[in-house]
Amino acid sequence: MIQVMKKYSLLISLFLFAQIGLAQDKIEWMKFEDAIAANQVNPKMLLVDVYTDWCGWCKKMDKETFTDPKVIAYINESFYAVKMNAEDTERTFEFQGKTFSEAQMAAAMRVRSYPNFVVIEPTLQNIAQLPGYRKPEQFMEGLTDLIKKAFRSKP
View 1 (tube, helix red, strand yellow):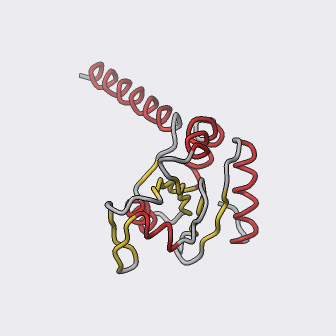
View 2: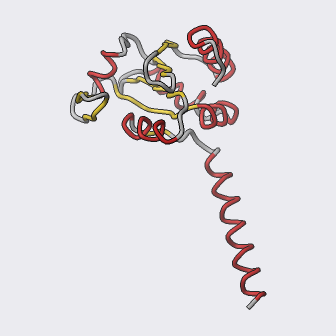
């Protein structure tokens, strides 16, 4: 019986280790409403990647910047990451007592260019924007500087 328990314990440990390793292979993108719900349980900043389907620079960010291991680790550790299509008028969600489409929320956040990264502090009261394409190092530096200036704190 003890041998069986040791085998199961080892298998469970290996499974959990594999899951932790896999979690860092990509950014854990969420829907806006899921990030808001997660923030209520464990407050953390939101990073909203506002994009459009036709935006070439958005696709370049997905392919080059958001696949960088340092960027992945930083975003997964520091933020609830959200993908939001600035032209999607179909999918809706509730936020602060109102119903928004992704397009309406992007407009409410005053996003006018793509890609655009909106940082929302954990209280959900203040936002700041980091517009434009950036390579991995530039993205992390820009994001860190934005947070320091806009919210006077580190994520």
